[in-house]
Image 1 (spheres, one colour):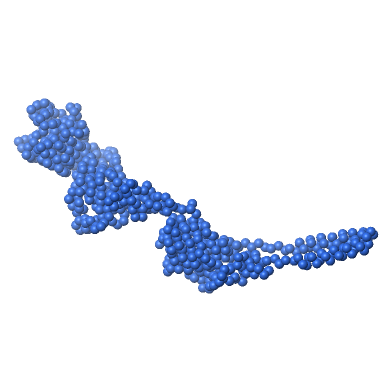
Image 2 (cartoon, rainbow, N blue to C red):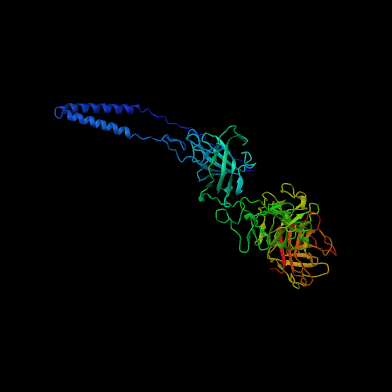
Length: 623
């Protein structure tokens, strides 16, 4: 139940104006009358000289007539000050009087129902201070201060609710609480009656149109825990008939919390709404596509959760549950990967796993679509970018022991309107003062060291190992087609054998290195770790040549791979040996002295080493 607002009931003091003494006015009237009589006497004396007794007789007759008139014209003045019912003192009734079955109290201040409750009348207009809807009482219960009607609503339920229900009869538990608040702080809690709220009302959002019937409220006290207790022998109030209370149309507050579509409760629509061919889902929380799947959109920024997971948030309106999409990678494959392969159709076996948790306790697993993983970085590197196309995921349960996923019979599904592009934020390497060690972005500062663990903790020294020179494989390196030679001799650098396929990539003459040679086994596709090898031909391995000298038995300097990763995106074959797309990551090579009869001969410890950029891509033929 919602947290209750603290009662704020103003205690208004009655101000009674003192009545003034009206005796001074009477004295003024008497004095005036005396002066007039004296003046008339003088006139009479003067008149005796002329008119004698005739004038005197006229005066007496006039006086007698005046006295008779004053006595017959006196009217009764009704006494109804502060009264709404009862005798007005003149044989009439004060105010409109009381209704059938009602009586007037002794003071004439209130009509009383058959059970002795004072009758009240409520003004129809409501003021809103959620969760309180407040109206003024048109009848005065006591002092001169204003009394009020308060309807406190703690749920969004509409329709007819019973104020006398077990829940609503106590202020501590009520969901629809009706209080009458007297100006002196006396409280009356409804113990009878119903509230019928129209279907377009939104009680929690400040829009209400309600009819209240058969209301009675009895005097209570409310303690600090909001427990209400009826006052023994206390008063009660009631309404004569059903009445309506409503907020003004201007007070309608749109109800769009957690909604992206549908009616906002004020005659308008929530959010951007749904597109053509879609429908608004339950509660307006989402749109539904033609397949009946809930449409979800995702924030583009991914968070890396080592070692294999990435997460992004579901875009949701305010008030909606938080949800996520989770990408899991159990191999470092890159490029386009099909989410519909048998391997990827179950969470227990998937190599590229996509799950959605929309925030409603359900789990969805991808059963359709593809994911195109940017080959610049391995999924395990923490730097990542991918685009998911034609995405759909179905509701599943996942076994906590085997991780096997099982579609829920008649379960729901989620989908997206278009491609989903997700990536980690751009990382800025931190290599200040370092020549080796982690750069904070999955790469290595400087050229790194050989052996790889020779870097000290501060990244400032390679210790007993050698500092490796950094080399950048230029993106313009060109694949040499089969049958060409470089340098211009009889040598051919693209050859096919049953054991190894050799590719040569040439840089411009001024580049360093000038040539990179990649050896792979036929039809290799996937991710392969590089290591020092002594057998020839090696599989897989890379050679690098610097400062090639034409027709020399060995080039000036040669380096051989000893560490790194090769990701083969496109398979090479005997039918199309040039169809190759390879990403080489974190390559480390050390100088060697060429090839003996069958072995790769490495120089003694301490020889030079080189390190490539975090990721270099080689394609044959070049795009």
